[in-house]
Length: 384
Image 1 (cartoon, rainbow, N blue to C red):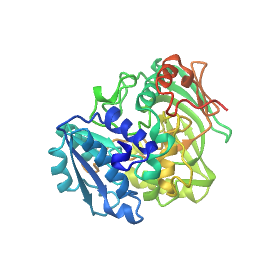
Image 2: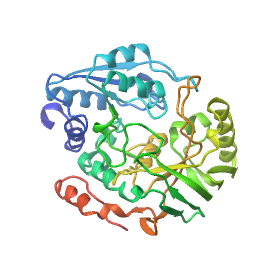
Image 3: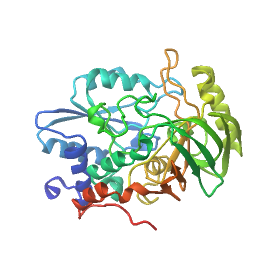
């Protein structure tokens, strides 16, 4: 097949994971690929038309019908929308593969509701270029990443367990884990179940664990990077030199200090507070990446925003939500300002869950058994 389609073997390894294991494309399915055309010419909506054609070719090789819709619409801050022409196309599709950064379902409440309403399977496509499709990140077996996600839930199933989180930059936080069954958060992301049982959102590759809700959080957090969905609207780079410090008392941020990034983040949180209320003062939610190989080089991905998105899904990346407020009727978007740390040590009920950035469950028997099924594909990295 690689010879017939002109696709390198490494990229074909990845596309098999996407089409057969993640999206589960079947003969006769109607598949839609969506992308912003400006992303091919330098915008944040990074896209490679050749990568789009490779996905289309492999989808069609499974007997499905596959169409591509190129969108040309610049999104406005706080006014993001789903173009009506795209809505119509999604409604008629069995599967929608989205290449667009601007159409992130994590932020757009309207988009999330629409996907569940139409019951169209939605794949958020993260490897948006040919070089990313050839990376170890994309080639990692989907089944393996899902198992890591599944097993990593175990430490958080103990209601009101005490946690202590530290890192070399000076982070010191403690609090209690809330009951995951009763938590408030993103629907369809139960801790220890596959996404397909609860939602129509199936990102590829899988990238983060569901949010962990906490209470009695106190301490201090130092961070020097964040998820770039919002950094670009805040007006800062997704990573910077001088760490930002957040002082936390009883589940609320009481002080944010540091350089220009701290000032910009504070202004944005104040602006969002005017739209969604005082929930933007809350500090009660964290979660983490679950991918064992989510690292790429600058040569593989010169785009800083996309490298940070990939880093965000690595198992070492722990991130807190700065503010915890839902969308509302007047502001139909989810504020998603994050504070990311990369080398945390996390103890839950005095049991070590992360050790200096290493997720201990990567050595779980169930994880290693899945990795052994794919000896020719990237597996679990050795602990350094």
